[in-house]
Image (tube, rainbow, N blue to C red; front, side, top):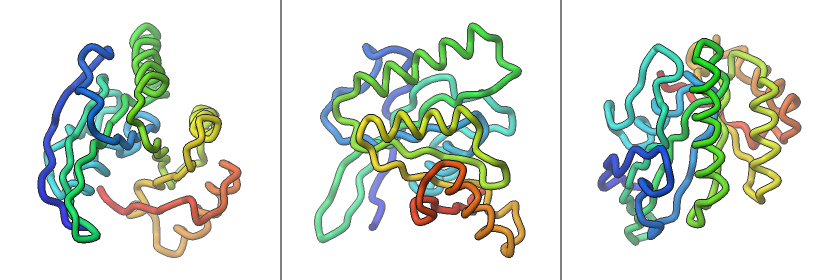
Length: 183
């Protein structure tokens, strides 16, 4: 795949702010500070396309990134969607509820959504919220792919064991867990 362009198209809190449903979309879900924005930046080969922070809970909107790429001798247009993180305990309860509502509204209403990919931190066991999100992903008919972030923070010798443990905790074959070493 050859990346042609990538741009931030919209930062939305409610459906009226979403871009038109003219492109297929791939959404990224996961806990706060798991590395969704970093993954999108790496995928798009841009350092500052998606805002990243060392402070959890910074992504509070549904962020839409338009991507144009070339593969199989054709150009393709699609969107990557960065969902607000869940599970940030230091955020006010009202803020957490607003983020959850924003995530649910997007996931339940977006017709052009092709896939939802869960990101989990490879260094830690998946949380109950991660398991719940993956169950929802499967219930909606998506494949249930997991990007295991922060693999670069572990010794190489531990990555395989952590991947197997994550797969077991999420009730997935380990080939559905993809370690990602971006920082």
